[in-house]
Image (cartoon, rainbow, N blue to C red; front, side):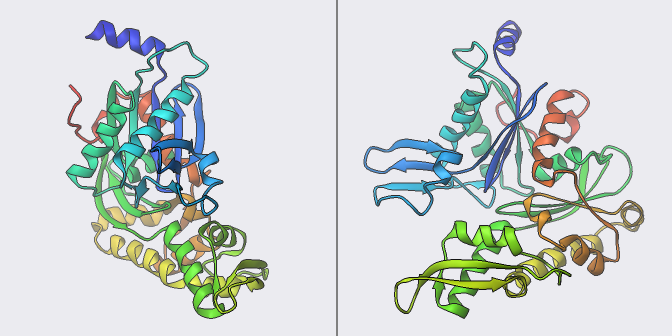
Length: 349
């Protein structure tokens, strides 16, 4: 078996995967991050054929005829469509191996999964990766991977607090000695904020927005606290009264009002997690600060709002979008030392 392992290892790149609700990122050992594409798959429902995966499929969201659907196979960081997730993983594994001569790539794969998923959900990720061509699958909780990616000393006896705000979930965790001491996992994150903007526009202006439009508005003028510079952007959609296209100009203040409830729930989860943390570790967190990562960490002023609510310094991780995948990559590079932070898996020897 070891001989086969060596042969497969020679023809395969070991990869780390951040299997996110919104985006899937892939890290290749020795190369860094090579793929950052949306977790979207376009399927022809008549023939059950997969037409596009990743960026190509995202372009089709909301723009397809009835028999073609662009779906996200992961909901709240958990697999909702097993076969499509498997196809998506296979596509990314094959894409990584295109430039290396390999008929049957059989890489070792480290996958980040949300904290607190059930045994069944965990097994689904593992089986999907194995069926997609992995020879060995290692699972790591996303907050732990994010902390490793943010270069926090999680294996030492000190408190490290990480807040990972992704597309489907927000994970808050205090980590010490390689394990999670206190945590909260919320199904409120980037997608929920997009939905808040859609609801706000419908209720206030009778204007129906698409999901991509809502996300673009969030990225261009979204904020958590009042900003010095006033921002505005056009908002285009369908008028629910006339049924015709309509454009209005919306301000950052209105979008802040739309996002307020979701943002407050994230801040409250951080506060509650600190309340549940042992006092020794709270002292460490006060000294070192809280680290924000994930796409949601880029919401303007969110760090300042968390700082006001917790009376603790808040840092945004370098390149917050890639913290989890960089963490999976660092585990790959030194799997023996970091073995203790991995979750037990069903099929690994």
